[in-house]
Image (cartoon, rainbow, N blue to C red; front, side, top):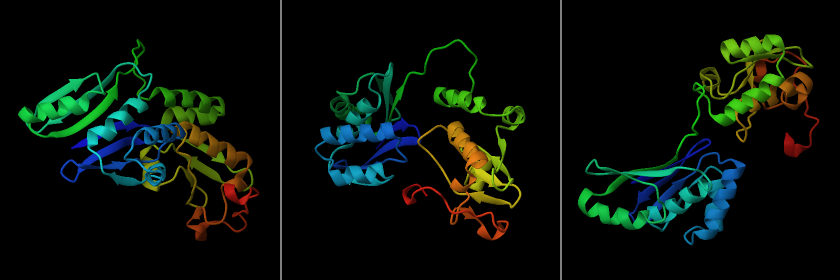
Length: 259
């Protein structure tokens, strides 16, 4: 059985192992708020040790000696504290799907239903979407707000680019090079592996900030390239470095911890 808890960068995943006596837990790129949830969850879950918590906070997978419902249900509750309309759906081997609005009693009734429906195969905990009248924008609320912030810092040409192609051209404040900036959710950024592409030298800059929505990550890169280009265009973070024009690789003025 697997239990999925949707999160900002994917999901918190719980997978049953050891004939149901143990659970593998996987967390990918937790946000600062999700790390706080992890700490609170670890404090209330006897099976979790400090070392386990450190592994999860750093994009790891751990295995604990506890049934899946006993570790996943408390996490589901903490991740969704204060949210309206919490729903957990379980799929059983028989094909039956059972839905419940409660979390605390799941371990007990799941065992009872398995006697007639066979083993539980998968579970997911979701929350009701926000109710509204406007036409769907196709973007999550947080990302739409991030678009508003980005918009405030785009010039007229960049705004037209963003509306037409969901991309922005920025010019390096030191090199004058033209950069093609794409949000990390775009197909082009996924193909390149990075959001910043130097169109003059045909290379990418290595940088990321997954703690903020894609639009605000792009905004930070745009502003820094335009005004503090030597914060990003630095040694070891330009690929392939052999294509870089002479004199365009800089030494970061920031302290080592920020390089």
